Length: 355
Image (cartoon, rainbow, N blue to C red; front, side, top):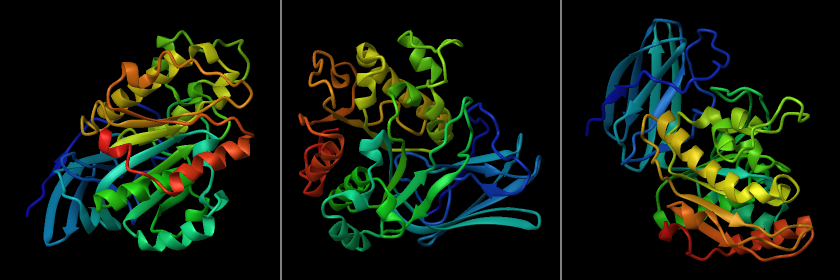
């Protein structure tokens, strides 16, 4: 079986992160990672000496392919032909007197996990943490990655820092999102091929922080200079925008409490606008490889202080490929987290199959 590499020359326009001419992969391409399987094409990119020809080799599973790309504005980028689920593979990038290698790379489905403290809650904090961490060793093909908690007032091309590099469980799993892990583990049990989980979330954040200025403008939520400290788009800029060039399968989202006291009346506009904008941005950033209507799952959380919810309009009524988990729990913040997670500890097949 031969797999060819097709060079793509366009990148999402943003500031170049740490472009010093050293040949290397972007921050979220590391050993043990999962790249998106067929029918989509996985996108791989990185940095190198300006004008150099970079030689790429994908090898493993009885195949080897070689291609070249030119470093332009300090960046190279390739799009792989579709690769079936499985692995492991090695990916090598080389210029004269320098090489960069990724080892133990799998192909499967890549999912982004976002939101606030509900998603951020670590696996070691749930009721049966010891049991889950012990079981994790039986899922070596569910790989995890976590972005650092960083904000930026400008869009970043790459992550400024990485909290957890791509890892094979149970390494670093205690500090990884419980909901994200349990979701991915359940997918693996049903699909039986590799799952890559990318955690990019932050407690106490609003939907405006995770939305681009484009999305916020649709709802009239652009921040004015005299509005105080900048809140809008700061997490989008530093924790979502860097991922746009990566091919993903879908996203899950667990957020909402902080919008009960910040633009609550606009959430029925701002949340669907964020979903639409993420889909457009990931589709364009990956050169059309991430689906324009990629699956987006979310938990419809209750209010902490205000036990009410305007359920007349929800995203699945106006956006396609949405799947919803509804929870009607009125507890303290800690109990909200833990009671929600109890639903995932013994998961039932009710979401992924209906996308």
